[in-house]
Amino acid sequence: MDVLQIVAIGLIATVLVVVVRSQRPELALLLSVAAGVIIFLLVLGKIGSIMDVIKDLAARAGINMVYLGTILKIIGIAYIAEFGAQICRDAGEGAVATKIEFASKILIMVLAVPIVVAVLQALLKLVP
Image (cartoon, rainbow, N blue to C red; front, top):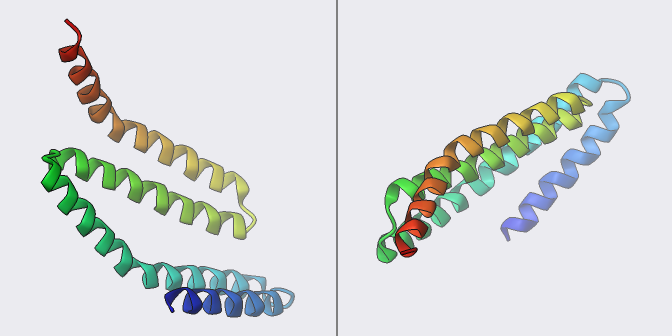
């Protein structure tokens, strides 16, 4: 049922944006952003329950919560950057969208370094 609500909001927003864009392009952009935010808020609760399941599985597997937190931050950065870049593309600012994506990749690399180091240290312990 949730997907029907999301698709309905998306379709209504699309029709409104197409109709309004010819006369008030700035209002069309705001409608598009508002629709994106509403859809994001609708799925936010689902993201929380997924995170709870992942945390439970990590605790059962004995995975260090520092690594799990880092992985969740990386996933969050990826989703937020993609959302922001798509909004910029919708506004016709492809160059800004590309810069958002580039910056997010750098941030993800910075966060991933401790995990890569830990994996390499574990591999070095296995090699005699």
